[in-house]
Amino acid sequence: MSSKEKPTLGGTRIKTRKRNIAAPLDPEAFSDAVVQIYLDNAGDLELVAKSIESSELDFSRYGDTFFEVVFIGCRTQPGTTKPDEGDRHPYSIIECEPKREVILPSVIYTQKILRRKPFLIKNLENVMRRFLQSLEFFEENERTKLAIFTALAFSQKLSGLPPETVFQPLLKDNLVGKGLVLSFVTEFFKEYLVDNSLDDLISILKRGKVEDNLLDFFPPSKRSNESFAEHFKKEGLINLVEYNEKKIFEVKLKEMKSTLTTLITEEADISEVIETVKLQVKDAKLPDIEVVRVLWDVLMDAVQWSGKNQQQNSNSALRQVKTWAALLNTFCTSGKLELELMYKVQMQCYEDAKLMKLFPEIIRSLYEQDVLAEDTILHWFRKGTNTKGRQSFVKALEPFVNWLEEAEEEE
Image (cartoon, rainbow, N blue to C red; front, side, top):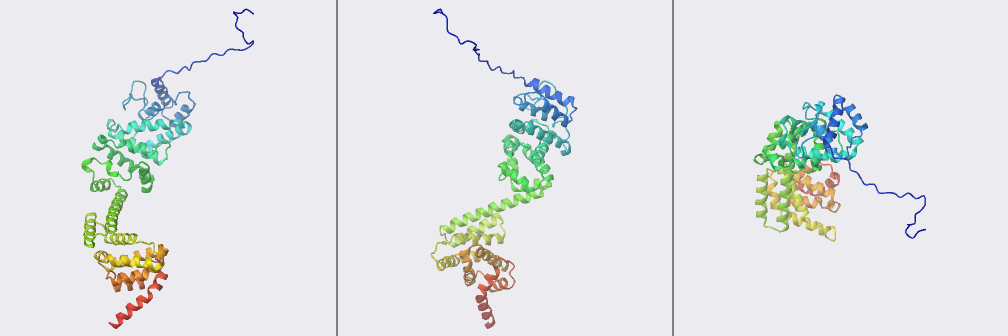
């Protein structure tokens, strides 16, 4: 062998590395091909779905373009909702009538496509988010169609469309300010509630992280609870108005409870506490019964229940009643409210084992502090309607009731 010859391995094939050759990006050709499938099948979505499944089109690369064709009928100009040059079909969601029975087949069709090609889920999110952020560029009836499609998509549990994809893009200041968002969500609510309950709707709103901020859908000039009630009553969504009123009530009640807890913990002067509660009750228009319930909850929550024995816990509870009796007296202004307070004490003692034996002592203390009248106690004893632990509590209170009746006879 010549010294210049290089040794070789006989019969060995030397492999050369192949370069990855990328297919040319051509969304226009892809769009035209999908449009042609629609045209060839005259918009029959069953046939269109079958043709798409059997086609060799690159859906993984042009997923956004595909959904543009589904919604608009062709691909759109980059970053807009305007149709781009190329073929277009007349069977898109934007071109159909704004009726649920007409749009529902498109929702079912989209669901089929996603089941066969689940990788397109992200593309559906992308396109929906872009369209919703561009509501101002659609005509009013086109926005209605988008709202109906979205509501039906949630109703049909369309995969690939999480609530945050819908609601978060809507909260753009310019869209909200023009009233476009309120119009969209109103159509959405009305359509969704045709087949679903209010609880289902609230669940979606929670997942969309907007359940506590429904007023954010209103233009700033109309962002009030009064406007909310007026608007949705007019649209026939009374149950949504009632839900919102309940939500407002719960927030105000929570605020009062928080304020009262702070004042009691800091041992504020009782006259200051009474005036503060009066103001909050007036501003929030809270029902008297709820106020009585909150007062009792806060007072008992502030008790130190860490006593070594039952007697120490009893002393702590009775001391709290005596200290804040004037507060309870201010708001227990009728036999009905006094009875409600007795029911509240009954439920607390029933639900907390360490308080079971305190019931008669607490009632007696409330009587001695002039919070509960004799007639109220006797009414509860003879005709009380709350059955929770009633038999035990009636028996425990019997000696005190006998004493009241004997004193009444002597008088």
